[in-house]
Length: 439
Image 1 (tube, helix red, strand yellow):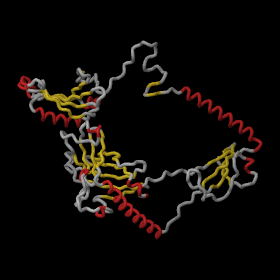
Image 2: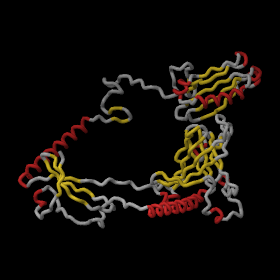
Image 3: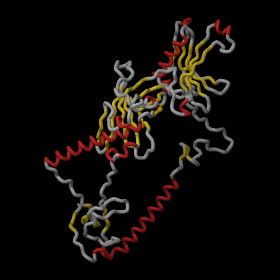
């Protein structure tokens, strides 16, 4: 049973406890601790947990004042004015993005967001990802996720210059269309909804995207945090920008810290020596136990236990090395096994068309086998259609090509006609087309 008692203070109290300083009863709300947090008043009570008793310092937390109906209405009106001010100022700050394009790469797809213009989804040329912003592959489709429907069209189009005659004052303070300021808890951010995107084949409606602008205090540049397809052909994009952080309304909420209740054991003066000796022994035993625990804990690096001799064999030197699992792409259990080309590349046939002479039969790996190779069935189906159109009545095949040290590629091969094989000496009767470098 826990008993609480009110403590009466005496001048000799510190000599009967293990407290290192006198307990002072007074207001300390104006003091600030070493971390910059304002100290609060404390009340002291004794907690009894047989056979021990403890002195506990409990912070005094003042309850929030109860507002009457008039004060509540005034507070709501003031909050509405503050949100309107923050929204206007926030869009004014974001006008600095005018003429800027941000890029985001996620697997097969790349995204471009040009402020005041549109959001576009496309497949990038593999080489462009290493030298700068992704550049769209002209052989693939691009999809507009949403456009800014602004009749003024005051934005610079894809990095171009502003139209002459458009003054800075015309853009300042005017929010783009379909925008709002949203509040979730203590966090405020700006939202812009873009519509009139490319028509979706599944829904028959235009694609849409919601762009959220969040304050990012730790960053020095604007960037796209992530893009997700929340529902079919409806997307959500989050932009992290330090521009909004200049307005305190958009700063993330400060971390709230719990008020600590600290307790210390009350030890009679006659038992202090025994108590200190016992605590010293307990601390030494804990340190010894911790040292043994650290010594017994095996060190694991990259999934290999250091000194365990469990991966490279447990015998003498000279034994053959362990057989490790081959990397992805070097498949051994699929229906269509890979082959190694003279230059060291590994080729895996994932789809193949026989041509008109064999009733245009198409062989494709199963979804499970494609998943093992890390290939999306939808992406493969799209590439298959493109290659079939290119091949016409000739045979074709799609291959996954992997060269050590380079990213994987999907290669389309179209068989040549007999006349082409007889006339051409360079093509050897086939035509190659690379679709994707990174899977």
